[in-house]
Image 1 (cartoon, rainbow, N blue to C red):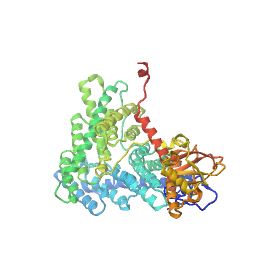
Image 2: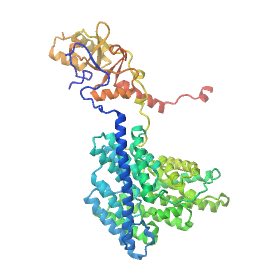
Image 3: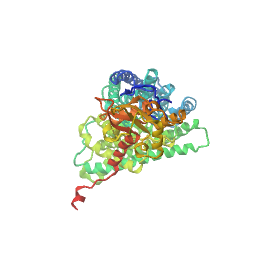
Image 4: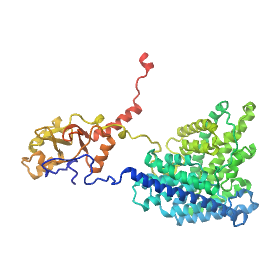
Length: 619
């Protein structure tokens, strides 16, 4: 294959004068015709539409859950969002979740298995391994299955399914229009962020969650559309559901700075709780995998356990936003908090581990908020002078446990802050959440509650992100300043003999630059060109300029290595002459693959090579 004579085995030899392309815009170039700014504007308009649609979907799902809850537990056909805990069905409450489990099991088996679980890992998988493509039926089946599961008593939240559904809508929009995989990723993340924002009226947390769990980048091309989508989704929430947050929270006393020692201890406890919950959930999933029956029936089995727990503790049934509000406002006694924390956690892992459909955030919020309230009340018993606020500690724990479990600590610091909109909550939220996150990283270094499922499928997930070193270093920092140059008039036979003698000047590089009598760059020749020329003319009397290529892709000393590497990849070449911008035939260096890898080595040295500090020098 011909690739401008700069790859092994390539040559041209038909042009008398060099053709130098600075941008690599030749055969095989995939540079977009439209400017990046135009594409960003277009994606932002699409993101606006996605935000509005996601906001409407969140409202419809909210109403559908209310409708199914009223039908299932109260026998009335109204769509008002009602808690299932006020039902008077007695033992008849047990079969209701089972019916929902059977329906969801059928939908998962014959519709799409992607509706199983809480949705965010599936969105991550689509971004990282499926070029941000989500099947259209997932956008339909996921919210319906979640509404059925929650409406029949499932202890789930609506946010996970809405996030996945919003992501599916964004992905579908990206598939309908002429977009790149990266643009589809942005649109998918816009839908997910809009779903989060439309559910809880937390637009900032929605944006950050999409960055931390789906995008793994912070660029204008993604940040601007994300903000547009999340803002409009929140506006839809305000219009249809009211301007306040999902949870009603009164003023809290966070006790800073006097309560900071207690927050330190709470951070450790929250980290342990996050790890314990993650391991328990996947242990339950493993137990279901061992059942000798068809997986269609697993959600029904999980629902049976839920029904029994719900009979004794009705507060575990359904989303439980009212119970979360009660915990945050310190309206529950210590014994009831303990019961709610344990019962909700057990009901959730049994139900979700069975493979049904539902969100993870709201139920974990309830259990972790109860944990924070229990901690504050317990410390007040041991240290009466502490006067810790049960509601404040409940809020902080609510953000910390899920932030640590999902490795999205920043998202849930902001999320909890947006719920209270009290700046005094920021310090304890930051402290407790990062301590909990540190504990979770220490005990579960390779996985989180979001990535464990994907890792078990053999998919490698890297959630950390940083600036690309190739975009921070320029060509002049790693190029070979002693470019391998040869006279263009040299015979192929002479070069072959020098290569056979392993002369350093010609053996260090696969490609060599060809210069005319005025030391101007006129071409390039590779070892493959030499072999091909000898096949055509065994006597080797052909000139190097005839055997090599005059079509050159070049780079400049002030270009970033990222730009240079892009030229190599787009043109399928392994080396670039480095030339002066003012005189493209004046060679100043040579950049090959080792020059690109040198940037990575530089970053590794920065991370792992310890430099002597002042103390050591003094000693």
